Structure formats: structure tokens, C-alpha cells
Amino acid sequence: MSSWYKEITPELKEFIAAQKVFFVATAPTEGRINLSPKGMDTFRVLSAKRAIYLDITGSGNETAAHLLDNGRITVMFCSFDKTARIARLYGHGRAIHPHDSNWLEYLPMFPPERGVRQIMEIEVESAMTSCGYGVPWMENLRERDTLRKYWEKRDERSLTNYQHGENQRSIDGLPTGLFAKPAEK
Image (cartoon, rainbow, N blue to C red; front, top):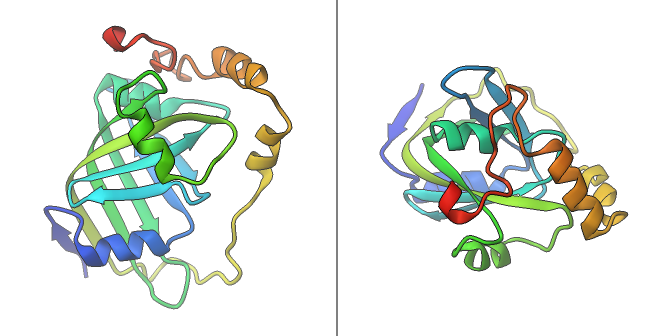
């Protein structure tokens, strides 16, 4: 029922692009495992071995802290329509910030969004598909605009203040590197 791949195949890339939601899992060397749902047309496959996603500011910044700690990341996509399927990408990642050299290369690949915090870059080591027969079929799955509206009502100063207060450390106290200078990472 499952198949393993050494890279993102063209068929996997097409499946990934069709999904409205994905899940990101990371874990520090010591501490809590994090699993975050994502959406908003924020995932891009760049090549058979590389993908990125746009990270919008939220209540925590666990993924960045865990990637800074050990780099391990798993991304999962589930089909919620008539075609039952799951795809997972396994690899190592890092956070790209506005002061990083490839920020201006990656940012235009996404629709403009308020509240952007960072871009996560993933070097894919392997991929896996499985049946997804246990995943429910959900009709009318559509994007929620709550986070977008939240940041549209705030200015850049509010965003920066929020990130300084809420996004510099993980819930386990690990640094996220959000405001680190490039040499400090």
C-alpha cells in the first residue's frame, strides 16, 4: 500500500500542488514534538529534492526552533476528496529570513501576504505515498481567511512587536533564530 521514493516525482509534485492543506512535523533533540497544519497556497516544490513554504506569523515558532536545533522535518499532504492518498516528504530544513540571500528569490513565488515571518526551505531526502483510506472525504474544503484578515488589520510595527514577544523562543525555550544576524545562525 505504500511506496518510497528518493525524490519528489512529477506525479507527487502534481498531487502536492492540488492539496489545500499540509501538515509540518518537527521535533527538537529534547522537548516537545510539534505538528502544525498549514494552508493558504503557501507550499512550492522547487525541484525533485527541494521545496519551500511561506510561513505566516502565528502564536508560536516551533518549526524554526526545531530546524535550528537539528534540521529534521516531515511534511504530510492528505487528499480529502474522492481520491484517497497521503504523501510525506522527509528531509532537513532551515528558516530563510528577509536578511538571507535567497529571500528575494523565494518570496515572489507566493501571492502577497501580510504577516509573513519566514520561508522554510526543505532539502528532501525521501518521499512516501500511502493509501489514505482512513482519511475522511470532506466536501467544500476551502481556505479560511481569519489569519490573513488578522494581519491585514495590523501594521508592520505591530507585526514586529508580536514576533519579538511571541516568536523568538519555542515553548521549550529553544531559540528560533528569527532576529539572529546571518553569522549567528
